[in-house]
Length: 501
Image 1 (cartoon, rainbow, N blue to C red):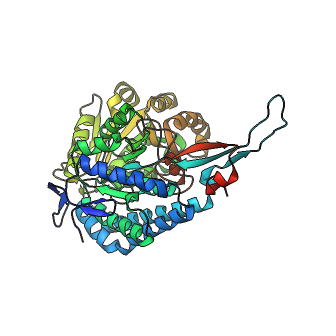
Image 2: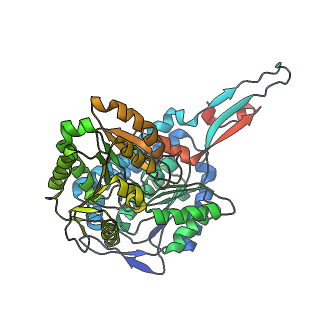
Image 3: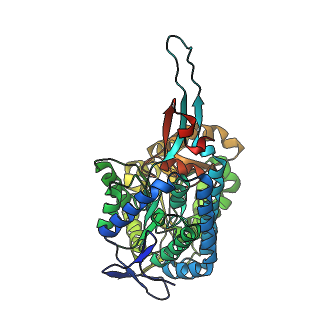
């Protein structure tokens, strides 16, 4: 049952003011508005909790992660009901996302129990080495302290309250303060209830987790600038993320801001693949482009193709595949408005050809398809900016040389995709060094929507895809964001962390 309150260190706390949810359908609920005072209380409790949680055993933290997963599953029906109401996402999507959320919690539990992430190193002492002896040196990864996490609009579960950032931070031994997203406050509260229940069941410090709802910019600002916060995880817009990133850098003690911000996820269609299966690629692209109303960070918004009769056929097939797709409900009214503004921005660029347009209003989105030339792309940087929604742009280049120019012009991306057949290998090999510099994940003959939660996954990339090109927000490698290496020189064994054993 919803309380409409914040969870601060095991206590459900009301605010002096409230805001109303804006569901796609169903009941409207009131929630307390967060304040800097709530932030301060939550962060101070997190710091207190760190003195025990940061030095807990891997088994204890694994037990917590598994317990949170259990409690989320126990509330599955309630989460799906409120999640579909708030977001407009279908039940199947919410059920799948819940499975992903609990799955990544359990994956991190298994990961830390193995201990490989600790990167333990030992250089034994060489007392007789000339000209100078070597001391005994041991190195291990240690948790950094309290972490702030901002919930994402487009994933009410997997990238929000107990999503990947929270799971990775808790696995590392870092208490978490979550700034809930106003697009799905009810979903966030139910998941917070699950975390609270898990902590109480295991008798762990309540300051390990807090959730603060609503609030104006002062809440986010006070959270990232609180002197006890040691890192921030964020998934959201470029503008919002960059503002928080700058605040983190301006602190007396600058801290890392791990923001996943924006990407157009270009696909490069090479000639032999287009000849052999251009229509199939077009149909697959349409499905990926419109999945979830295009509200995925990995939505493939750009298709780059060499001008040819086969390119004409690809354009026709893409238009035909997108035409029957009806209006879909977007996550919020604001996202829907931003989508239409992005459409207008693209349509206003010189040299843009409108292939598929329609009318959508309110909270609805319909697909749009545009085409342009390689020259116009290179002359208009605005075309490389993300439009969050089911909008596709076909860039027809004059030849492979111009395709390379387009690739080199890209800003940082989460993904880049090659569609190629055996006869395209040489061109694919030429593109690979360029695309490696541009993206965190490279695909061949597929579509980037759908990010596997696995040890090898990288969900990040050069700016503006993310603010830290060396990190990922998905997969077990993401735990590295909330750890730092510590070296112990000539330290007695009885004083070393238990994780060395």
